[in-house]
Amino acid sequence: MLYSLLSKTVEENKNSVSFSFLRNLLKERLQYIALSYIYNSKYANLIFKGGSCLRICYDLPRLSEDLDFDCEQGFDSDLLFNGLIKYFLSDQNYPEMETQKYPQRLYLKFPILKKLGVFAPSESDKLYLKIELSTVKQCPYKTEVQPIFKDGFSFLVNRYSLPDLFTGKLEAILQRSWFKGKNQEITIKGRDYFDLYWYLSNKVRPNINCLFYKEKLLDEKTLWSEVAKRVKKIKASDLEYDLAALMPDRVFVKNFCQNYSSIVLPLI
Image 1 (cartoon, rainbow, N blue to C red):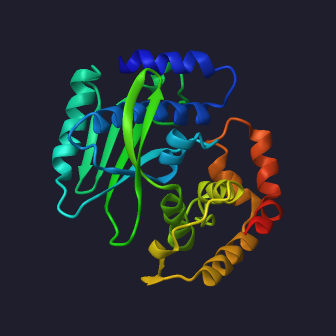
Image 2: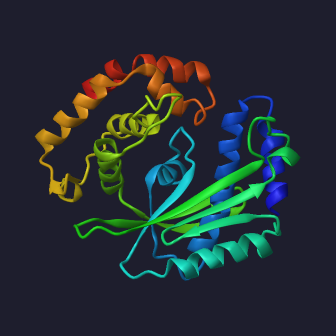
């Protein structure tokens, strides 16, 4: 099942997108399988969040690499992770899968890219899926249930409301540590700032009662002042570094990144 789904994705897209984008598109197909398992099981109370939630539930026009969930204090992640591993090994008939398991994080590694023809000699043959859990915050958040129908999979997602999802993204923008590039010179995730644009352009208001910065609740004036400071400092090349593999149109990505500040600052 898994191989046929991935192979179909390659055949439908290999002539129109870059290999880096196609590899992330294949990760999205793995996400559907994992989500179908989770939300058609006893783990359906996990709260879906992050960029993958926006992508799958709201058709965000960029890909997302990982699955992120919130869970209650004391949740047994081992039971979930062992169940997922068994599901991919048995139900999805992929016994070659490798795994790395940590208390709140699971990596599933599929040595399949060479077989699919989405492979360069300098790169790994493994397609990765990361699943990460966090403990839910003690604040007045809202969750919603949404039916999802993707590539033959159907399930009911339990996710945060849009204002709460926006709150999580703003906290990432204010607090995320990320270093990439040859000399670790890139310190932002372009995907965070694309999502900021998406939320603002869709007129979503964050849940200010759940927004913490340096362990303190932020007022709206301080929040937008801090966000605007960061937007003004962004280099187009730093935005593009992350976004290029998550969106199919490289020309759009370059133009969007070069004009980012003038697009986003009026929306703040």
